[in-house]
Length: 216
Image (cartoon, rainbow, N blue to C red; front, side, top):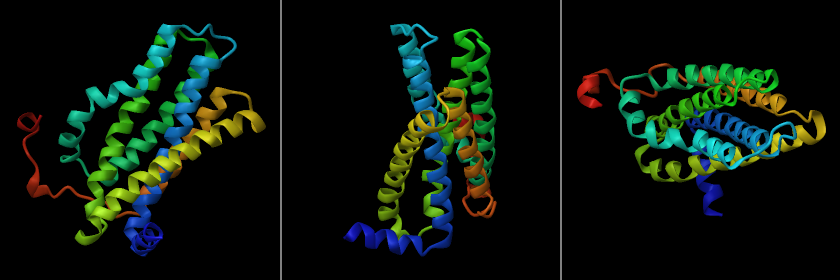
């Protein structure tokens, strides 16, 4: 198949493989986190699911796309993208652990949703950075193929992460908090994978920076 051949060519590029590893681990963690959030809000026996709770969970997953998405590119053009992957995933690991702790301590729901919202908000910067960094690791004539295959692989990783979350609940621990800790571990693994990339490799170039206020 042509797709398999294209992927084989791209995987020969060392820095593309490393960037793809960051994406796969990060988006697998996203899948785990989303399943844990959904099962806690909708299926948790100790909670009385309501339309407001479901709407809040949807807002946690979708609101960052509307509020943060338009500004993510502006800020990414001022930050080293490798560092965004490193610190963004470390921050999400901490926030995932915090969210897990909030699940088991019986705090007010709004505090739990704020913690979960912070995880998905950071996700917008990581995903935008992965797309922005792609031209730095592949040749120009391979960029279209890489732009098609890399996000698709990330979506498959997120789906696999969701499946892994269900398996953990069924076979290891029937606990949404435990599933969130698994997601936090995957975020840590993604942060570790980002360390295999050179700090300056993914840009941006210092000479291309705009003044922050005018850019926003």
